[in-house]
Length: 254
Ligand code: 13P
Image 1 (tube, rainbow, N blue to C red):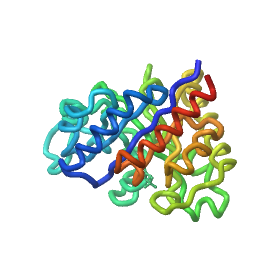
Image 2 (tube, protein in one colour):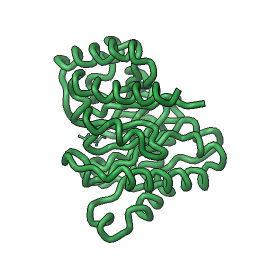
Image 3 (cartoon, helix red, strand yellow):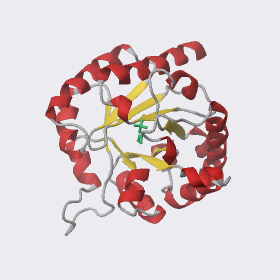
Image 4 (cartoon, rainbow, N blue to C red):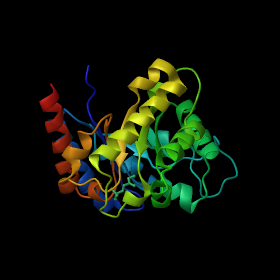
């Protein structure tokens, strides 16, 4: 069985209601391109409206607080984003790890809270440029996986991992296809060590400067089950280029 490539747009802190037209266009295209599974994670403020505009694609959040509720000014719980229409949430994005000092422990708590609320999660990991240059990329990512992945019975099927090298995010630089494949194989080994047999079915997305013109080769790398896309997911036109590449690749496989 081949699973469909999972193409997720992370809109980050972009988008007001004017962007709903893009979501609608992406949704309409996804209806035709059924060989790929498509989702977007808009900012909190657009989750509800995007869910109403788009019927076919998945809608998710970019983060959640680990608590169910309480005195946490400015934070949003998993139950709240689910109520707004989110089916999944991203956790542990490197921008949150860096800008909000999020630790592996906190990322794991967030992932477990989201799963307890009935959502699935995309757990992000990735090394900095200095860590790659010093040959530590795989060990850094392995440690992030050990510390950040939710554990417990049946959680593996709720988990997607996104490998996003920090130095490739928003820079237009990407690792070589060989490096992507090597990292994804190493992540797969770790997933099987953590989850046992179920770890072999967890999807591993690549993220970092994925564009329509490099999507096909990155998606074809070993153990790559899809892409987490930032900048190129902000317009239907460029996001569609990536979705088409994914769908074509799937056509070749089947
Ligand atoms: P870019 O695609 O803009 O490099 O962003 C990647 C990313 O961080 C997605 O979560």
